[in-house]
Amino acid sequence: MKTFAVALTIVVYACAAPPETSKSATTTPAVKPAPITAVCSDAPNRLCPRDEASDDPSFLQFRDRMREAVARKDEATLKMMIDPKIRTSFGASDGIASFKPQWDELDAILKLGGAFRGGDSFWAPYVYANWPEAVDAFSHVAAIRSGVPVHEDANEEAPVVTRVDWEILAVIPQKNPAWFHVRTAGGKEGWVAAADVRSPIALRAGFSKQSGQWKMNALVAGD
Image (tube, rainbow, N blue to C red; front, side, top):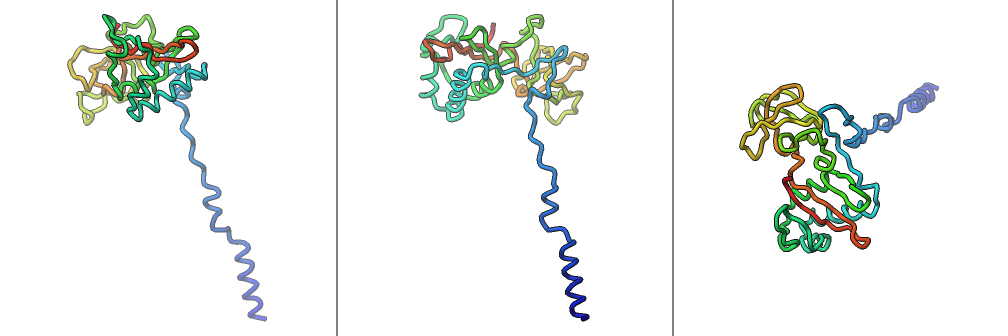
């Protein structure tokens, strides 16, 4: 009888105890990061990311293929996607003969969205395509992400004065290719890493649809 009671106790305990997998089953699943545009709201002195590429599936497919070619540094494939008369400057242009792939810049341009200008023309990145006309393009840059640190000096170890979210920043002239000396809309001055901002007159790409096929027809900087 005593043996039976002990066995019954073990059975009852086993039934009451939670299974070993119950803890993992109730663990909160990882939250999928929200798209960048979901956390940027339009506001004064701010330039939110925009990408209209999906408005035309044929262009979106073309751009995806170009991004793959750029990632591979596949110059042969890239050149097949370029207009032989591509404009590479605002002066005399030799077309594709003057085209020199700038892989890192092309990668950044193709990742930073853009906008259609008419049904058969697209410009990237969004910083150029959507730049507000009221803001001087030569004396301003835009932060291209949230939480961009503005440092006291041109050094990532320098104290952070403030952080900005996609803000349009006034540039204080200073020669330093890796950093921009800027002033925020709130009047604070400091330094931002060049990788965290972009000028609307920096290198940008134009695309056009020709005889039913998309081609890159411009890769220029300046105004």
